[in-house]
Image 1 (spheres, rainbow, N blue to C red):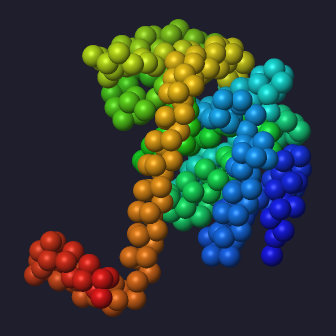
Image 2 (image 1 turned 135 degrees about the vertical axis):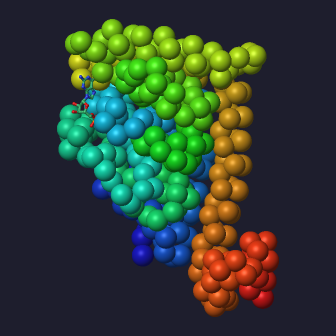
Amino acid sequence: MVDVTDLADDIRVGKRAAISRAITLVESSRADHRAEARELLGLLTDPSTGSGGAGGDGGAVRVGISGVPGVGKSTFIEALGTHLIDEGHRVGVLAVDPSSVRTGGSVLGDKTRMSRLAVSPDAFIRPSPSAGTLGGVARATSQAVTVLEAAGFDVILIETVGVGQSEITVAGMVDTFLFLTIARTGDQLQGIKKGILEIADVVAVNKADGDRAQEAEATSKDLAGALRLVHAGTKTWVPPVLTCSALEGTGIDTVWNRIIRHREFLGRTGLREKRAQQQLDFTWALVRDELDQRLRNDPAVAAVRAEVREAVLSGEMPAATAADRILEAYDS
Ligand code: GDP
């Protein structure tokens, strides 16, 4: 049993143990923990207590950072985070990684790969919750954002890998979405999913150093062209494409500058509307996730599952009939 009021007070004065504890609480799927988490978040977002982020215009600057493993996300976050701390910011780093398979050292939010940030009192790094579904991870992460904002972190960086649905999920939690890539040839550029270009607000070609600098420059021109096509005919923000070297620390401030410019483009009202819409979308995502869980755990569904599977695989039962059978079992 947690004393939620004490915990909220400790978070507001920035006690790290309390922040860790609160994030563990919001990551838990236990019913009693979820109730405590709701109470805690209620206290932390209560406007009468004057908390809820140091951004001044509705919380922290929330930035999503995505890119395939090896592109330099950790190195970039280390460089950007240190730069921001030098400017007087306090930086929270979270990660969304729903896959249980972690390949090629791509563990997100790994403190050992952000060694300077990890020891800074002005940074708080939290690896991705390992909780099963993407919905569960998303719920935990978005609540962790609230905890960090209440603790006075005014920049929140959310890291994710460039696979599947996780980018879309992160885009739904942040004000600005940064897509990191590296120099590629024309053919490889085709491999960049159109979807990512649609959700990116800022694009940066990393590893623009040494003999890769020129290649990175060429890639950034190609990508800028591709983005103009994706956004053709709209009067909205066309994502800028920049080059940087996370390793050498060059171009990082320009990337940050564009992130801030994107926020200014949204404006106060635009940002408020964007966040409100995100909350609404997130509400339905949570409902769908919960329904999915209930469907999975339903005993009546479990009872017909094997039979329906056999019937569908052998071609005896059409999919639509099979779906009806499962839904009937669920509704019964
Ligand atoms: P992540 O998997 O996206 O988090 O990538 P990492 O940050 O772990 O970087 C993968 C590898 O690329 C590491 O060996 C880094 O040192 C290297 N790397 C990252 N950024 C740069 C950069 O700007 N230039 C160069 N040359 N190497 C980099």
